[in-house]
Image 1 (cartoon, one colour):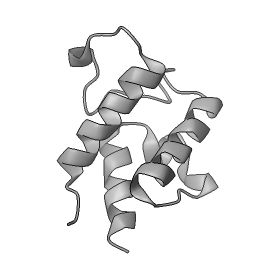
Image 2 (image 1 turned 90 degrees about the vertical axis):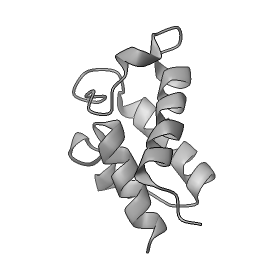
Image 3 (image 1 turned 90 degrees about the horizontal axis):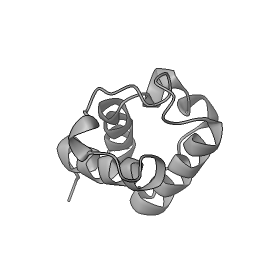
Image 4 (image 1 turned 30 degrees about the vertical axis):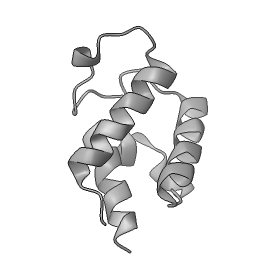
Amino acid sequence: MTETVESIKATLKEYVLNEFLPGEDPEDLEDDTPLITGGIMDSISTIKFSLFVEEKYGVELQAHELSADYIDTLTAMATIIQSKLGE
């Protein structure tokens, strides 16, 4: 079964809230909230995120994909993961 972008976003939102925004209101983290350019995730966070994605979805993000150009929002993250699941 292929995961939908929406289901991936829900999983990623839960992960980001638990790991990087503990205690924050889940309603404040929207699909288009900037995570890297907004200062929520830094270089260490992106590595942790990459490891989570690899473990959870079995896909590997390349080094250049760990930038704001590729994973700055939940929507962008989910889209790239879904595209790799389809490969």
